[in-house]
Length: 94
Image (cartoon, rainbow, N blue to C red; front, side, top):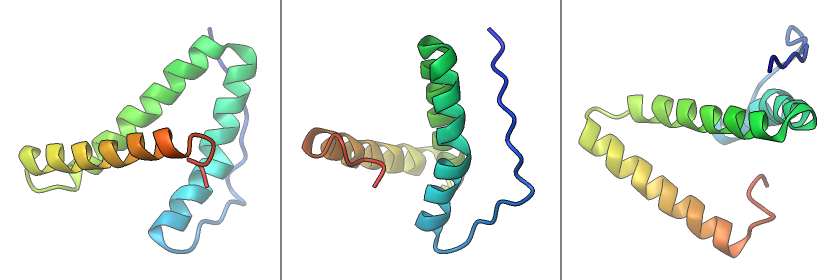
């Protein structure tokens, strides 16, 4: 299935601290794409989201000096995410 959603990004401005820019990218680009894809095909939306997660983790891992440190960082981040998911399942995008 081919998903098509046109986003005009020429007018997008991202500014602020790193966490604020990350939220803006997801609110302005990733989330609208995921919502459109979900409307067309929930299965494809899950594939899209898993690839976004994979690419984000890869980018994060590349910031570390070695694979062992990257693994520790990803494990730590995953544990924090899963704890937040259990404790506040409806507040993860806040």
